[in-house]
Length: 86
Image (cartoon, rainbow, N blue to C red; front, side, top):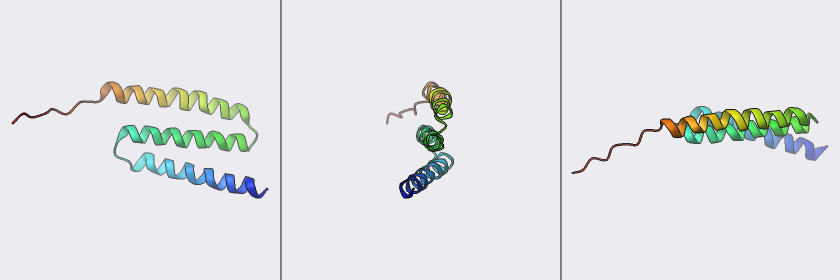
């Protein structure tokens, strides 16, 4: 019982930390990576609640779908800064 409480507290801190990082980080790429960490830690919470199907759907739909879509959008719309020759 003690180990479950410690694991819950650890993943709760990871979820809150990654969620705050998504909002506070300026770089969109790092924000997307932190979003993946937050979504994966929510999937761990589902596993701890013995809802394995919800955890699998969380990983497949959100982490696999939404995060990959954000990653492709970032890669395709990133503008390279112009180099000035002096």
